[in-house]
Image (cartoon, rainbow, N blue to C red):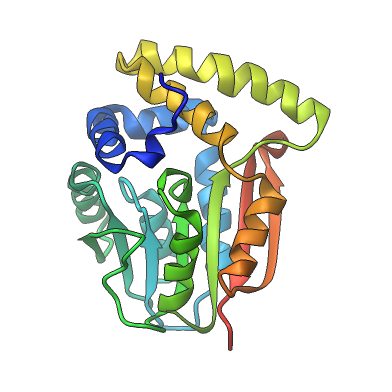
Length: 237
C-alpha cells in the first residue's frame, strides 16, 4: 500500500471497488459487527425531507442507504448515485428484490448531473472519504439541495478520546485489514480503510468543511467509540 491514499487516484479507487463488490455487503456487516444497519437508519432518520420531496443518496455503493431512505420515506422519490458501475450493478437487483422504486444513476459526486435546489435531502454514507476534492463534494451537495434541505454525511473518523483511539488502533488498523484479506483475498482494499481515515479530517474538521460549503446549523453525533460520525447541515434558506 502506497503512502498516497487511493482517493487521489480515481481510476485506482474505481478498480478497487469493482474488485470488492462480491464481498462488499458482507464485509460491511463484519467490520461493524452489524452496526452499520443501525447507523444507516440513523442517517436516514436525520435526512427528514419534506413530504414527497425527492432525496439523493450520493456515493450510494450497493444501495443500502438508498433502500433505507426509500423504506422510511415511501412518498419521496429516491435517487442513488455512484461512480462505480460495478456497485450499481449490485444495487439495482437489491432494489428490485426489495420492491423499492429507487432510481440508480451513474455519476460523479464532484459534478452532480442535477439542477440546483432539486432535492429535499441529500445523503452520503461512507463516500466522501473517497473523493479527490472534499470541499467541492460538499459544495455540489449543497448546490443540489433545496433551501433548508438537510445534507447528511455518515463517515468513518478518527476518535478523539484515548479509549476510542486504542479501539481504533486495534480494530481498524489491524483486525479489519486481516479480516478483509481473509474474506476477500484483497489485502490492499482493506488496508485502504485505515489509511483513508488517517488522511481524512476528524469530526470537527469535517464540520468546518461543511460550513465552508455554505451549510448552516452543522452538527454531528459520534458512534462506535467515536469511530463513526453522523454530520447534518442545512442548505441556506
